[in-house]
Structures are given as structure tokens and as C-alpha cells.
Length: 236
Image: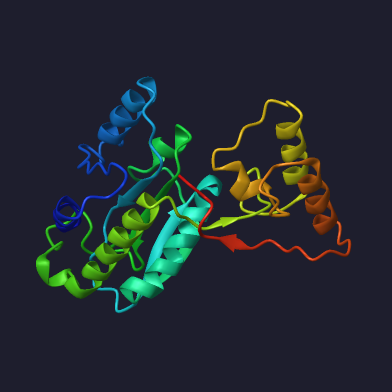
């Protein structure tokens, strides 16, 4: 609610929707219904940030940032923002179907699940889940990270590795093939701005030269290009 209050007083360029999903523990029913309806209506959801269990006393400054391969660029951004704005260390990991982010990922939308680093297994779903088990300073830091993430993404800026055209989290020959298919009508499309992922020679256009340069990098041929994280060209 604090993030909503701040954004209401400081409007962002893009719409931010806050959703308290119902029946997460009964099979993610609320988020499943929301994602299904949004998908059927063709809603343009750029990113979903799931915050679930962020306040346990873990005696740590780590925070879990769980994601799928298409969301790795945003997870990378959150790692950077965690250090800069929240005094936290973001720990990336693979997301599973255990919380409300899942059905958004299944629909093809990018999502990150922010979660306390030390899981409250002692108090979870028990009458020992009390206020004394909460670390409000830690929770505040996670909320700051969430606000920084929403504000940054709303400005059309994210971290993206140029060359990872199929967004699987690594740069391989499949990326060069993916780019060639995109250029010559193979039916592939980019979920993120293709200039940000595929314009590896920074010419301003996607050409066969980008695919060749990418292939040279993959096979260890001499060249002056290496994959870099960019933070200005990747619009959500």
C-alpha cells in the first residue's frame, strides 16, 4: 500500500496495477483467474512482480529473486537496484509454480517472485506466525526494491543482454539462428525490443551482419564485440 501511495502522488509513465490475489493457498485460484481473463482480453502486461513472504527475521541482507528464462533481464535489473536503493543483495534463482507469479509466466508474461531469503518454515501457516517474527527493517528494504523496480521499468528501461535473442539466459548458436529466422521470415518474433537483443553491432538496424557477428563471438572468432548489459534501449 505504501508503494501505491507513493505512485499515486508521483504518477509514472505507464499504468501500474496492484492486485491482492485471493486463494493463493487453494491452488493460486485468484491469480490464475486474473491471468486467464487478462490473456483472453489481450491485455498488454509488460511485467508482473510477485511479493510473497518478505518479512521474516532472517538476519541477512539477501533477497530471493526467482524468475524464468524470459525474465532474466528484469531479474538482473533488480539485482542492481537491490544494491543501489535497498541495501540488499539480490540472489537469482529459478521460479516454480508455488506462488502467484506462475500463471503470468505460463501466459508468456515476464515475472519475478521476490521472497525472503530465509523461509519462515517455523511460523508458516501456524499460530506461531506472529508480529514478533517479523523484521520490519528488512521488509522495508524489500518494499524499496519493489518501488525502484516498478519506477525503473515504467521508464522503459531494463537490463538486457545483447545477443541473447531467444531469451533463454545464455548466448549460444541458437540465438544466431533465431535472429536469422527473424530477419528472413522464419516466423520468430522478439518478446523484448529486437534492437536491444539483436543489434549487436549497434548499427541501429537488425541485419545479417548482426547474426554473423554473433556467430563469430559464439565460435571464438576475433572480434571487438562481447555481450554487454544495456540499460537504455530495452523497452518493456
